[in-house]
Image (tube, rainbow, N blue to C red; front, side, top):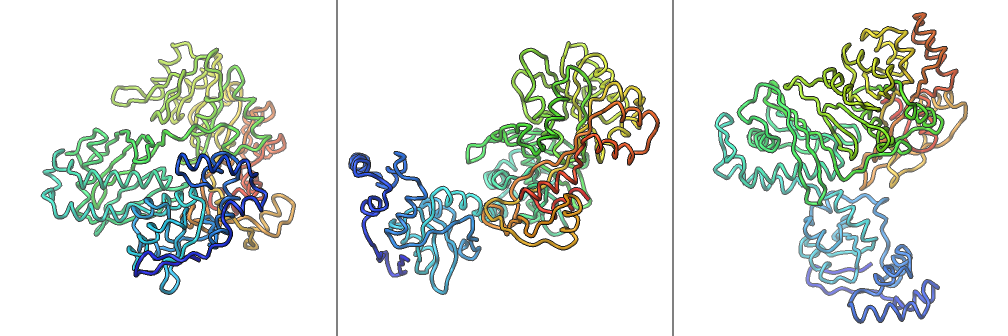
Length: 569
């Protein structure tokens, strides 16, 4: 390793052969390629290795190996090595970002640092001065280092600094006398910005701001699971809530009644996000939930959200029908809107007129006419759908069918030559049929109008960076073997790493069951057959249940039996 003592920047390197000689000996470059790169280096002053990679002469991983051999420093795979918190506390985010280097661990009196350029003496000196320890240098790909810095260096320290400024400043106002001018001071603005930017960086779908008896609790929902991320002093609560209300154009003086609002922000990274805000009063004060909609994320294609091949074929046949109703069902947070959006994104927008009515409009489409529900103006799903029918649509998306009137109009639309897509709250695909009956739709109309039902859940995906093969509990293995009829010794599971914040999971995927409304199932519904019998018939006709879909994804190493048990119990 390379070491530097705290007494100065004197760095001893145990060099072997030069980089040029190593590259030639390894057969990675030709003499002509090397000469060409050297000429570019003389003009640009860039590093020879970087030039060869940019020119495509050498693969970046091969160059990393050659640099490791040349400088006699070990390569660190940051997807496999866990960065230790005690090491990170010694080095600020500013230093790490400036030098493209991250502290990895402390070993006795030395700080192990992962660097993109181990020859950067200035960087070694900076880490030595900041930590007060001698530095042991390792090497990694610059992209991995930057990803790790982005993932690991959180905003907590800067938020604490801003909170101390709020306490010391003149804006310690009484909650009842807050004004826009009082909360617009820099510490409050910066604190809210940091909470939002950290949430976006952590891939949070929701940010929860919850007053407790002695603290202001901040939680992020990441991959469908809530995580505590920090506690703030309780006296910052009115200022932070008021700042959020100002951004969302809400009434900052109203604290007892629930409110809704939204705003857009551009993060430090350049990402544009929409934030939807909801507030309500609780026994400990007003809480807020901020839904994060990242505009930089492209909409998923149907083939990317988790449909198995057979299920996807059945569903594609439905959405390309000229008329009829398709329902997507599942609980809140099960990905129904994602599936609906992926569906209409795949349909013809030139030869057909597509219209939607949503609450709220989460993503905007080109060449699709989207309507936002506005209860204050009397625009509900039912009234909007009734008005929409007079505008000559071919395809209609209704965000949710939640009442008898909406269900009735949607059914009539499907019967009169329109393709209708909607979501409905039901536990499974067969349950959605009975939910329509409970909403007052006659079974014979359901049989005529309904093309089919998709029921879905979301399961977390095994982190690809730290996935390992391991044993699972006996009861889980028994369920797996009973469902698929095969035995398996080892199963994929994430052990926790830098990129998944130690959870072992990164991202989510849908599990689905697609029920096609066949003649036989229609007859059973008309005959008031119980749900289990209809479900058995649907399986005979080729429906793959959500449970089986999830276990197949376990077999493929996508998710775990823990997730299947938790989401599909």
